[in-house]
Structure formats: structure tokens, C-alpha cells
Length: 443
Ligand SMILES: [Zn+2]
Ligand SMILES: [Zn+2]
Image (cartoon, rainbow, N blue to C red; front, side, top):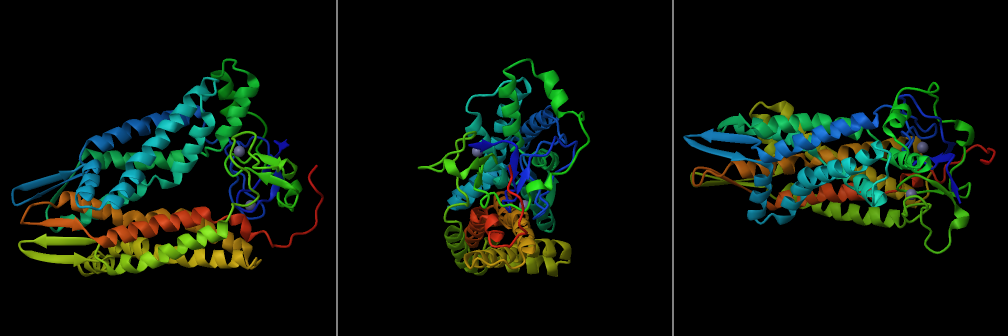
């Protein structure tokens, strides 16, 4: 049985009554402080998010079609589009790194935009598109892996790096990527889980003209916003015999748990906790920790210039920035490439060990650490993007040639593995053994 009047926090499993529509406010869990997913608020109307998604898609095509940067030195010129950067890595036998750059900067962002439009346009018109469940799940899956903003920072670092070697000419795509980064910030503020609620409303209304209704629904009408009702907040859904769907958040009774229970709304398998969460997180962490050693010891780039060859590790690149006076860049690269991966490995190990031991130690702080790891993990891809652009730009024959080294593959793998580990860790395990004051069960 499903409970549409209840909502469970996706981070601590606290159970709440679903709040009324919020006028631009975001509901936060009173237990762990996480922003509640799937709670309707009128921050962005469907019309606005549609407009921004269309604009982002056009800008995305411009960003792909034109060169990001051009280099000019001693009468030689070279330019690179993002796709050429991927091709350079592929030709240099860095197939996995090429696939990482292709997926995070081209495939996943474009899939997110196209899939969002596929869902939003019919919903705006009061229809539910075909394969709604699968397409919305796709949006939720690809969203954390699109890294346009990290790539943009990578381009800026490449510019500073190249300025001492050649004249750097910004390309049309550089400005397009700048605009795209801002648009993705707005799109990221839109919670796709809300679309499940909108779909239910559209289906319940039965296909009457919808644009006017959408305006009423999404506009700033209605009662004053009120935060999530804490009436049932001292209950975990699991302890109340309920399961919240991982994908759409719909709360179900545990009694429906027969063989392979599935969500009645999105058809995803239902689990009280992510299955094998600790084992999978630990396995991925172990692989990431092992690869972190070659990631730092092996060169990420080979440079050959006028018969001289040089290998650069990540730390050597940071030292180069520091020596040449670009200390702000040295700090940025050090934080993104050295500190963030180490922090991620340390924090995820702490979380896994604490969850394995069923510890109730500092749950709020551990929940905040988990949120921080989720947010900062992607920024470690910075060095991989810098390498891919540099390799693509510097190919001046015997004068200067740069190729990617094996360290780039190891480093990219560490980033992907730690992101997967953080994704596999179920934050509700942090709260499972925390004692709570007794309260009345939800009706
Ligand atoms: Zn919570
Ligand atoms: Zn579901």
C-alpha cells in the first residue's frame, strides 16, 4: 500500500507529513538538515525551466561546434574543439580517459537536456509522455555525472598554463561554455523528483487543457509557505514499517514486501536500505585507494620539445604553477587534485567503518560530511580536463608535442571510483542506530 500523504527524508529516513505547496521556499529535514526531494515549491515554473533548457541545448550545440581555444606560436597555429580533445586522447591510446571526458562533458549533459525537454514539453501541455518513468530515471542517473562547470574551470587553467608558451586565442566555444555553466547552475536548482508529483497531478486531471493550470499550479498563488510538518519526525520510515522508493520517493508499506517488491509509481525495486551498501562502498574505496598511488607517482603528461622530453606528475604541475608565481592556480589544482581525493577517501572510509559497526557517533556531523563529499567529488576531474585540452592543443610536430601519460588514467579512475563509492553509500545507515525520543506512530 502506498502513502501519498507521507514523505521520508532520503538522507536520514525521517518520516513527515507531506507539506503544502511552498512558495519558493525549500523544505529541510528537521532531523538531518537535508533539503527534501520531491517537495513541490514554486521556485522555477515549468515555463521557465523549459525556456532555460532550450537555451542551454542551443548553447551546448554552439559549444560543441566551435573551437574552445587556439594557440599561435612561431607562425604555427593549432585549435581544439571539445570533440577534438576527446579524439586526441583516443588516438594517444588513452581510450578510457577519452571515454570519461566524452561522457562527462558531452554525452551526459546533452542526454540530461534532451531528456528534460522530452518530459517538460508534454507535461506543460497537460500530457504525460511515453516511457516517462524510464526517461526521468535517466535524468536522475546522468545528472551527477555531467561536469560542464568543472570543464569550464579546466579551460581557464589551461589558458593560464599556455600563456607562457604561446599566444592563446579564446574561441567561440569558450564563451558558450561560460554561458552554459551558468545555465546548468539554474537547471541544477530544479529538483527532477518534483516531476513525479507533476505527472501524478496531470494524470489525475485527465488531460484537460493544462497551460493555464500549470501557471496556477506553479505560480506564486495559494497559501503562505509552511515548512515540513514535524508531526511524525521522530520516526524513521523503516521503524514505522514503511519504505520510501529510492527513485521517486513514494512511501510504501513494508507489508507489500513479497518477492521482489516494486514501487507502484516508478516500478523501481524497493529496498529499506540500499542492498550491500557497505560492501560495495568498501570495495570501490579500496580500488580507488590503490589507484591513488600510481595516480600521484606516474606522469599525467609527456612533453617533448626540440628533442627534450619531460614527464609531469600532478605534484610537478602544482610545483610549476607555484614557481612561476601563479600561486592561486597552484592552490586550486592542489585542492582539486590532491586534497579533495584524499578527503573523499578518508571521509568515505570513516563512514563505511562507522556504518559497519552500527555506530551512533555524531550523526549530524557525519551526514554533513556525506553531503560535502557528494558536492565536491566531481571537482577532482579538473586535472583530467586540463590534460585533455593541453594534449589536443599542443601538437606542433618536433617543436612541441604533449601526450597524456598513464597517471591521467589512474587519476580519472580514482575520481570515478570515489564518486561511485559515495553513490553506493546509503546515508540512512548513519541514522539507523541513533536513539530517538518515543513518539506517536503516523496515522
Ligand atoms: Zn533527514
Ligand atoms: Zn518509485
